[in-house]
Image (cartoon, rainbow, N blue to C red; front, side, top):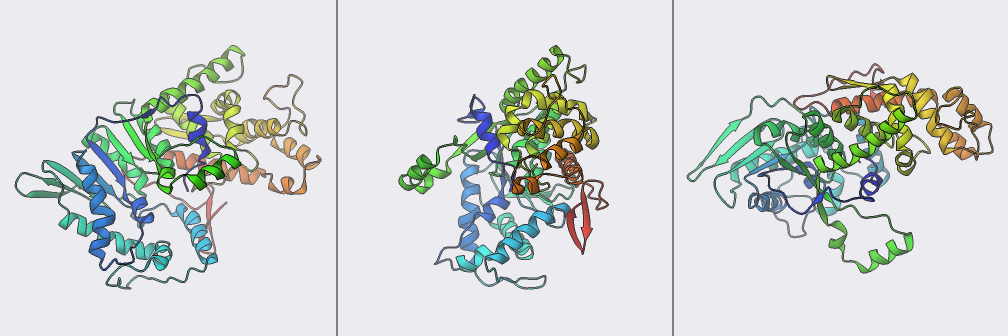
Length: 450
């Protein structure tokens, strides 16, 4: 799912200087999990070998023509955070609703060739099946792939990480023992920067942008990180969008662009620092020293994740535009309810709810919530006061039902805090306690939001 797709559109409205045409680095990281999920089976696909060569060998070879090192990475479900099961259950539920009848369990053997496309789509919703397929894919790549030129390197990262160097004569293979087990493929790129330097991350998963932003600034921008993703298109009126979809070839709708994450962060940090400076001039409550670049990236992630992600629900009735339009108020407010030390991001949930969140809802529903006499962001009272005003207002019953509760807000904030700290782990797995500490519990043997 990633985060809301409106964020990159908002960021590119004033400047697209962070979009670059080419890169000079020699390493590319391929999120092959996405390649698998996007894959399809041809009608005449007669073997797994033909499917794997077409779907994986060919694009790897294409990258090897331009890059000296290609890193191919898949999810390792044994180590994916247990909290991800909430999103997984949602996907399975959706698949079931669309009459998914595919069954595959541990111990089952793969068919002699890929399933036909209709069943293949259903099969990709089954984690056990995917684990078997990924094992087959990675084994075949490691054994049979031949790059289009020598003096290149291939890394295959699944359960473990295998480095293969192709020499003028022959090849050498070594297991990278210092690489700890990690689950999701989109967080694994960070641990390869120390080995290979600047790199391109080939991934359409939007989360990668924030993960890369946190990594770059946490490491003082020592290396350049680029993200190759679907091209961001400006928002269009519905009528024009319909017209374009009818006249434009399918392939044009999936053009790619390369985001220079370091440049993107420079742009967004400049915008956020202006908000901090303005708050200081107005003597609004904030910290005395300007936040570090790493702290700013954590704050940016916090703002983005308020609109939801795989590990948290969004703030109801609060959208991307509302948040970014109010960034001058939001950034100083976040500084008063969070802290960042030793790469650990901490959220004070009570202060966040009664300050930042209460102010957001007050500003969104100004007709129904009475601000203080100064009309500023500070609100006399707390979130309880705001909710009381909104529930007794003339808002529709549907809107009132959608409004958050103090408990749901506390859960969301704890979820977000956990996600930001999870994305700071460069080699290893996060702790996933299900005691409610991070807004997750187990009920009826399923992980749920607290």
